[in-house]
Image (cartoon, rainbow, N blue to C red; front, side, top):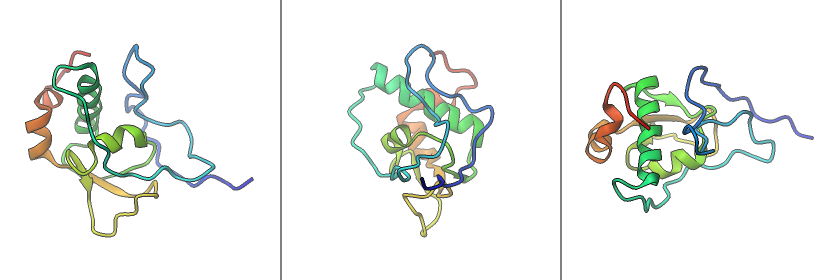
Length: 125
């Protein structure tokens, strides 16, 4: 069996949305290959439970990384894909969508427009 790739694990980053089973991080690298980061259509309407999950994930990203670029690491691809290309973007032109080392950054202007609640000091979930 092939050894899974190395990935940064973000200690202290919320593992998921409380009470939902929705994860924000993964425990280990995928031995079958890295799930690609790609922009997925978002159907969540403001006020919906899906929108709250996206906002909570963005809140965690902002309060953990701020405006600084960050490696994808053990952040869940499914969650990132719903924000990617909009609120979270590639941090450099050599972005590799299938690398745990791929650098991302929050598009603060758009993120604040779409998810103002994510930038509050405390977000009730």
